[in-house]
Length: 80
Image 1 (tube, one colour):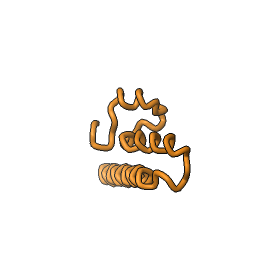
Image 2 (cartoon, rainbow, N blue to C red):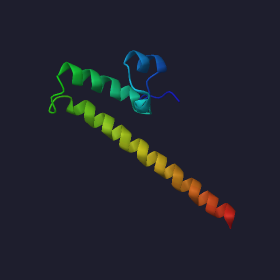
Image 3 (tube, rainbow, N blue to C red):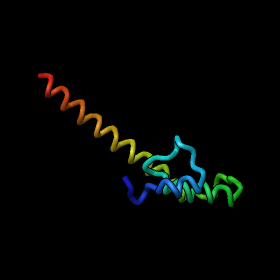
Image 4 (tube, rainbow, N blue to C red):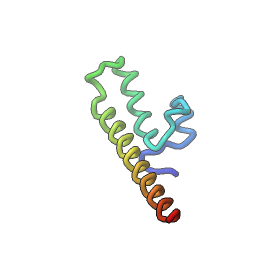
């Protein structure tokens, strides 16, 4: 499960990432949250980190939807 965008359980625990946010992009969320805290949550700061995290979330969504459509197509094929 470990990849360049997935943090280890220990890293997520140390960064106090809530369970709902521990997904494929957790390694990008940790520096984003650090930057946000350091810059007092100013919206124009941390744009690069935010963009990288949101792109990762989008790519993960597209990957999951592609897998789902393949599974549905296979199920339809098996039903025939």
